[in-house]
Image 1: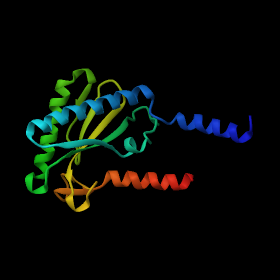
Image 2: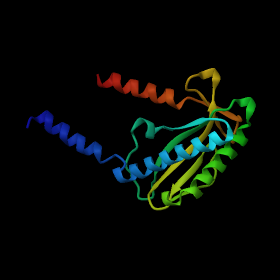
Image 3: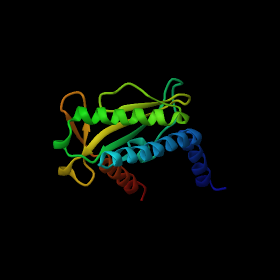
Image 4: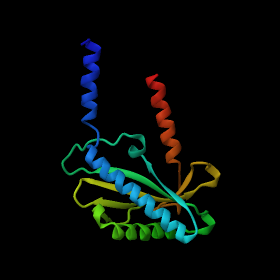
Length: 181
C-alpha cells in the first residue's frame, strides 16, 4: 500500500471516531421524522402549514463525538410555522409550538423523549436513555429574506430574531466544496 493511501486510511479512521455513533444517530433521526409527521398533522388540523428541518451540525453532517462523559449530542432543528408576523406574536408562536411538542411527547412514549424546560430561543427534547438532546427553534417565514429567511422566537431583546440557517449551511458547504476542489 502506498504511503498516501495509508495516510488516507488512518485519517479516515480517525475522523470516523469523531462522528456520532450510528445507533444514536438513528434514534435522533427517527425522533426527528416522527416529529415532522406529527407537526404536519397538527398544522393541517389548524389550517396552516409549516416545516421542520435540521440546522447547525445536524444539517451540515458535522455532529461530533462526545469529549466529556457529561456531554450530550446537541441536535438542532427549525420548526417553521407558515404564518406572518401580523398573524401571531413571538411569545404565542413559542407557546403554540411548545404545546404541540408536548402533545408529540405524550403521543410517542416509545421514543423516550422528555420536553425539557423552555429555553431562550427554543424548546429542548432530552432523550431518557441516550446522551442527546434536540433543540427545536420556533420560527415563521421572513418574507423580506425569501426563500430561506426566518423570524425566530427570542425571549430576550427583540420579539423576533432574523435568521437564515439554510442559507448559512449552503454557504458553509460551498466554502468546503471550494476548499476540497
